[in-house]
Image: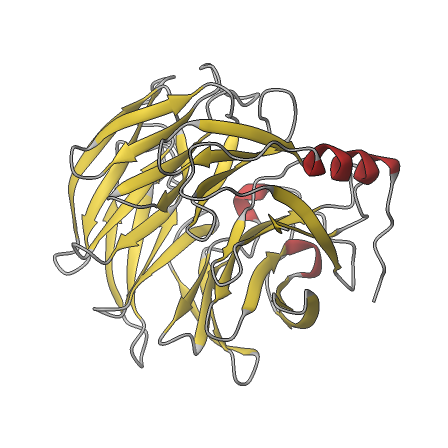
Length: 367
């Protein structure tokens, strides 16, 4: 196993994070610091996408395109414990690379992940191997996922191809046989990003960075998995929502792509209210973002800002007041943030480029 190298950049990062001010106005005081770095064996990790943590086993599953795998880590011991290979990996084009989205399924006995060839790979966690491959029939990667445990349905999105097919989501039964239940086109959307299942009402909320071929209008698609239909698309202006995570009080944190190099709108991160279906708070201090999460233990929203103002960073927002707190310096392309709820740790893959650790998992948390 490679030992990550501590570069001057990391030393600067540790100093900057350690000097972070105490969070004011949160449910309790917390100071977020870089705690450790977990080495990743094999090819130095450079391309990756989404991760998830099983809170019962304390195992963290991270897509690793550099090793064409799902990597497995123990978040209590902060160590690499295994790998399941068999994915497309990085092809040189994000639209055809994988793994991508990832969800724990069927009482966390399986992991389902979208791959670059428009398929979903089903991994049996006891055997630690791929046991099924399900085609969504698209032209590009099968992207992000989420799971409805009440109805045993996985939702996964595919971006469309202009003039060929619209963007669409696929609903797949996770019961034996893995039947495709529906393929739902979302013709207003140029791209499908993060879906989140809301157990309070049994609906999926799916972020749409761009709708209606505009520069500044995105949306959130509300999908009923039982009826297999889009109930409505909520328009969200000046955000380009990509990351989406449920927070307290029916609030949602949106990781906005606004402010990225390909965006024509200024940086923004927004908090959205599911009851009123409106943005209730926003900040221009974080943008160019992808994944977002909610750390209940720390009372924080966390946003991965790979093109944030001032450089790649992890944005912290008070989940009680919805006020921006600070941006913590992070490695280039810091778009993936994964939450370990049991210990309040924030897991951020760091690629070999940028001088942080040559490819590792950064672990942030309260110390």
